[in-house]
Image 1 (cartoon, rainbow over the protein chains, first blue to last red):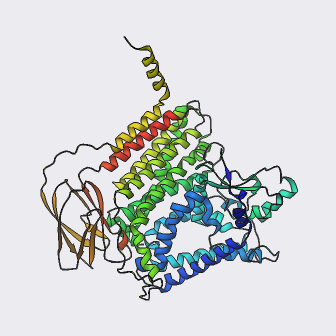
Image 2: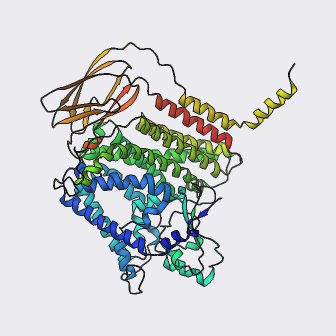
Image 3: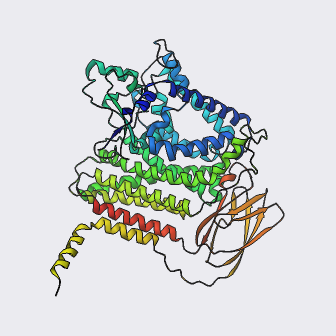
Amino acid sequence: MTRLNLARYPWIKSLLLSRWPQFLTHAVLLAGFIFTILVGLLGPVVGSHNFAVIFVWIAWWSALKLFFIPLGGRSWCSICPIPVPGEWLQRGGILKSTGQGWGLGKRWPKFLRGNWIQSGVFLLIGLFSAVILTSARITALVLLGVILLSLVLSLFYERRAFCRYICPIGGFTGLYALAAPLEVRSKYPSVCAGEAGKIHYAACPWGINPLALKANTNCGLCMECLRVCPNDNFAVNLRPFGSDLGPQTKLHLDETFLGLVMLSSVLVDAAIFLGPWGALKSAAYTIGSIPWLVFTTVFLGISLTVIPGLYALAIWTGQQLSKSQIPFRKALAQQGQVLIPLGLMAWIAFTISFAFTKFSYVLPVLSDPVGLGWNLLALGKPAWTVDTNLIYLILKAAALVGGLLWSSRVALRLADGTNPHKQSLPTIGFCMLFTLVMLWLLIG
Amino acid sequence: MCNPKHTRSQENIVEYIQPWQLVIVIALMGVFIPLPRPAEKSTDRNIRIEASRFNYSPSELYVNPGDKVTIELVSNDVTHGFSLDSYGLNLTAVPGQTARVTFVADHPGAFRWRCTVTCGNMHPFMIGKLQVGPNLLLWRAITLGTLAVAAVFWSVHK
C-alpha cells in the first residue's frame, strides 16, 4: 500500500529528531495540567463555569476524538504530560537518560498485561461519568490521582507501565490507532538486525521493539527510535486509513473486550448526556442511591453481558454458516477488528453532538479561567447554547453510516472460510444493530 | 429491428456498471429525493412542561407539522430555561411563574430543547425532545446504512 515518509522532508525530520520541541510541548502541557488541577480544586463550584471541567471534558476530550486519534492515532500520547514527571525520574534527566535514573525498574507482572485493567478503568469511569464530567472537584481529584499513580508506578516498574496497562485513554487511543493514517515503521528491518538493533528497544519508553513493529497499538509516536537509530532506518509514514485492519494484524481477546467496552460506553454516554431522559441523568448522578444501583446494574449488564453476548453470538453464527475451522476463541479475538472503525466513528458522532452543543462554554471559561469574575475576552454574555441544526445532524448520520460501511468492509476482509459473505453476515448484522441504536440515540 | 451498434453500446454500459455503483446511485437518490408529506390537519396544542433539576416532564413531545403549539413552562425548584433547536425559541421560568410561548411547528424532524439557565452540575445535559412529524432524516440514514452494507457485500470479492 502507498506510504509517504514524512521524515524525507528535511524540516520535518529536524523537528522530529530534536528533543526540544517535544520537551517544550510537554512543559507547557504539564503546566496547564497543574493549573487545571488547581482551578478544579479552588475555582467555581459549578462545573459548567469551571475551567477544569470545560477544558478537560469539552475541549481536550473532543479534540482527542475528532482530531488526535482519527488523524494521528496515538499522537496525543507523544505529548501527554501525565507520564512526564515519572519518565524524567526514570531517566535521571529531562531530555535524555543520564544513566543515573531513579526507580526499581521492575518488569510489569505478566498476569496483569494486556488491556483488561484499562477496560475495567473505562467501565469505572462510565459508572461515575455523570459526576466526573460535571464536577470540577472530582475532575481535579481524578487528574491528581492519575498523575500521582503514574509517578509512583514509574518508580516501581520500568518504562511506561502506567500508559500501557492502566491508563484508559491509552487503551482507547491504542486500539483506535490501528485505523489512523500515521505510523512509525522501520524502512528495512534487516538493516538494523542483530546487536545493533538492541539500541532501539533500549531507547523505546513503551517497551516495544520498534524494528518488529507491525501495528500501531503500542507505539506512542515518541520518535525515540528515529533519534537513536545509527542507520536512519525509521520512517514516519502517512498511510491510508485503516491500514492495520485486516488479516495481517492479530488482535488479542483483551483488545476485543476493550473494543466492546468502548461500544457500550458510547451507547450509555449518549443515552445519559444527549438523551431526553431526566430520570436516567438523575440516576447516573446520585451515586450510592437506589436509582444509581439500578443504573449500575443495567450499565454493567449491557457492557459485560448484552453487547459481548451479541457479539459472540454473531461470531459463532458466522463460524457455523461458513463451516470455518478457526477456533472460536481465536475468531472472537480476530474479528474484534470490526469494532475499531465502528467504535471510532460512533465516538466521533457522539462528540459532534456533545462538543458542538457545549462548545459555547469554552470561551466564557477562557475569559475567566480562575473564576474571579474577569472578562479577559470582553464577552457580552455568559454561556449560550449552540443550535444543533441540520448540518450537525447530517454529520452525525454520516459518521455512523460511514462507521457501518467501514466495519462491514473489515468484516469481509477478515473472513477466512470458504464463504466469506456467509461468515461475515452475522458480524455485519451486529454492526448494523449497534448503528441503528446509535442513530436512534443521536438523531432520533 | 434493433440497431446492432446501439445494442453493443448498451451491453458495454451494463458490463461497465458494477452492482455496488448502482447501489450508491440508489442510496444517493434515497437520501436526497424529497418525499411527499402526508397532509395532516394542523391543530392548536397547549403543552405544559414542568422543569425540575435536570428533568423536563414530559421530556418528549410529538406534534404534527403545521400545529400551533403553545408551551407553558413551569419550574418546580430553581429557575430553568428552554431553548428549542432550529426554532430560535427562548423561555425562562422562575419558580411560581408560568412562562409561555406560541409557535407554529413548521420545521419537520426531531429537535432537542435545552435548559439555558445554570441550574446545577448536570445543567448542560438537561434536554428534551420535540418531534414534528416523521423523522425523515433518521429513516434516510437507516436506508443509506442498509444500502451501504449491500454495496460492500457486492463490491468485495475474495
